[in-house]
Length: 336
Ligand SMILES: NC(=O)c1ccc[n+]([C@@H]2O[C@H](COP(=O)([O-])OP(=O)(O)OC[C@H]3O[C@@H](n4cnc5c(N)ncnc54)[C@H](O)[C@@H]3O)[C@@H](O)[C@H]2O)c1
Image (cartoon, rainbow, N blue to C red; front, side, top):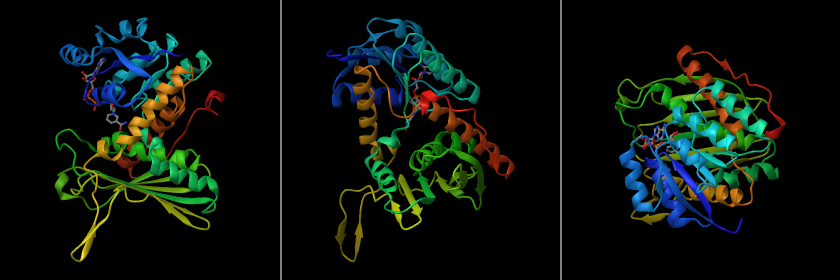
């Protein structure tokens, strides 16, 4: 395709507007031609500002000739209602995480994509596009630290909204990114998960925070994930792989270290937007470049399904205190 990719965006809230900004101002090869949102006023405001046509609903946006590819940034429970029609229309779909909010819905989407006979879905698990995670993955794959045995992940937020954030969200909204990264780095599925909560951070009131997820991978590697969402000092993402002959870890994300007085310091990102801004740019550019060639890559519907299975098991494990197995359907060959 020589012309720009025409993208229709469903959901013009926070991340929808941010993706529209990057497509319009930062990236190349695409423009946003269409928008829709359950909040019509919001869609009209964004459409007017960005020169995009406002559609009454996702069905009319998806079927429009002025839309080559669909970007879904609505709330998670609404994703499936846009993903399935987009697949039926044969249009490439970028869907923000989660793919859907139940394993059954994820399987329906997988079945529809398998029936289409080719990958059409990329999910917004952007950490795979982060330069530091990519370097960590390349280090493991190079054999420099021998076979990976353990992966330790930490996901620390400065704060979360006390009235909105729940114990389940610590897994379904937050830990899912670490689950994705563990599968990505180790090339294995999660076979079981435990979730442990100890002494609470008093800042979070009744919230079980922090929690520790302990996952056993299908090849026997162990993964630990600390989720700590009221840590105050900033958004701190850590990851270290322990291998047979060495270790590899994410470096600090600051670009400069300042030494003065009797100490040294570097900036901690305020939030995920700052920490992963380049990863978001890279993932959406990848989607654009692929879609213009008629292909789709990146995190797949299978990844979305597998993460949903582990997330559900994690929530059950947190409630029961027991290890919960992660039973999955057979992986269709489309995703090999
Ligand atoms: N990858 C990431 O790091 C990341 C970061 C933030 C959000 N997200 C995901 O992006 C999605 C949106 O999150 P957000 O923070 O932008 O939320 P938001 O509430 O700011 O925006 C969501 C928008 O979707 C609209 N909407 C809801 N249901 C709709 C429907 N059926 N049809 C059309 N519009 C509908 C809402 O009116 C709202 O404007 C969520 O799935 C979230 O998990 C991913």
